[in-house]
Each structure stands twice: as structure tokens, then as C-alpha cells.
Image (cartoon, rainbow, N blue to C red):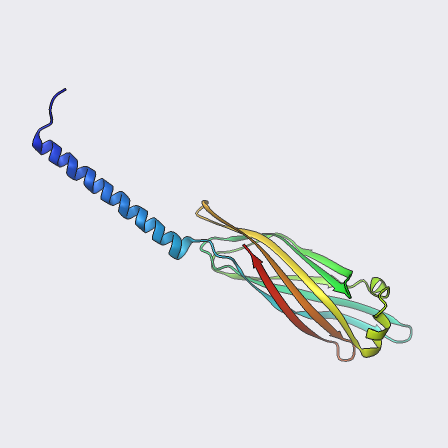
Length: 191
């Protein structure tokens, strides 16, 4: 095997050193970019107070129809889209299921905000089975609990994945007197 000259060895050593330093610099840049920009972040979910979309109440003959509007704002802080797989909303009256709805899957673009809208028709016949129904009707305030669950994932550079589940629970008071709602919500994010 022929021996390399000192000049060739030196040139080879310099080339390998430059290559190694370049690789180390690229790795450092990739790690910095991951932790500063591309690390998947959980979405910011903000419930919008539950709205009263429709209320029809008459005394003679007794009739009651209620439709609630449930909206949730999703803010995607990632540099990649957030894919919402499923959103389900359930409405309870004194722990009795009286309405449910779902929102179709959708994509929230990178660094943008979207609102998930749905309406829920309340099953008044089921509400009447509660022992508190007549008392609540007499007081003019109907208490509901709204629970919305959203699941989805963010994929950054087709490498980094973040699965998130967001639960929004709201206590809603519907006033029969002035057709308004009072809403208090809590949000929990599971990553």
C-alpha cells in the first residue's frame, strides 16, 4: 500500500476537520431551531360563553323549545397545522343528558386561530323527568352543564408529533325571564 505524503495527510486532516465542524454546527442549529421554533406546542383553547340561539316559552299551552350555541376558539401556536380529529359537545340538565352535537374534523392552519361552532337542540321532554324541572321553571332559571372535548395533533416537519386533548366544561344558567345566559367555563389541556 503506497504511503501518503505529508501534504496529502495534512490536506485530508483539514478537510475532515472542516466536515466534522460543519456537521457539529448543523446539529447545533437543528437543536436550537427545534427548541425555539419547531417544538410542538399545545393549542390554546378558549371557550366562548354559551349563547342562547333559540328560546320559545309559552304558558298556555305550556311549551318550551331551547337551542344553545356552543363555540370554542382554537389558537394554533405551532409552525405546522393542527389537525382536529373530533369535537363532541354534550349538554346536561341536573346530570341528565339532554343534548349533544359534534363538529366535523378540520385543520387549523399554522399560527392561526379558528372558532368551532355548533348548536345543540335541548330535549325538553327528557328535562321534564328531573325532579327539579318545575322548581327551576318557577324560578325562571334553568341550570345546564356543557362539556366539549376536542382531540387533535400537530405534526412539525413530518417528524415531531404532539397529540392533545382539550376538555371544556361550562356551567350555564338560562334565564327564561329575559332570554339570556350566564356562563362560567373551565378548560383542561392534556398533552
